[in-house]
Length: 124
Image (cartoon, rainbow, N blue to C red; front, side, top):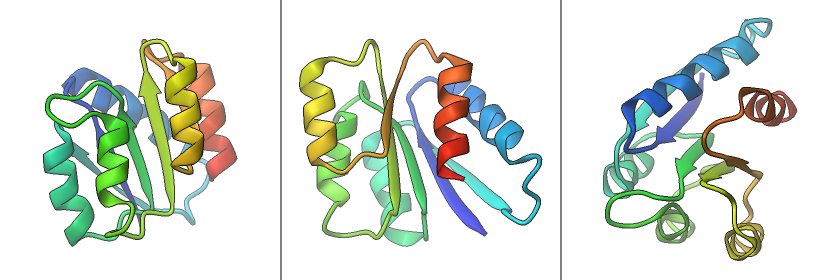
């Protein structure tokens, strides 16, 4: 089972990402997933430190800690294999910091379904 955590304070965006994950993995029944959700970085840290999460998909703009701060907080404590970040729109500074943090990719918000679908296809 592949654990995926989607972190966004917008419930509709979380479920939009969930739908895309399900579409991408529909033709890959050998990759069962367990999709979890968090509305804040603090909530995500609790999940990440207690569960096996292979893919973290987080928004940059979160209440409290932002997405990059979340990644920095967990980098030494959890074994999340892959991380994606969303931002409105992605700035050069966030792209540089994201690359330094080892992100697999950054996608734009509002979500461009084709862009995120391609990133997910590349990951799976």
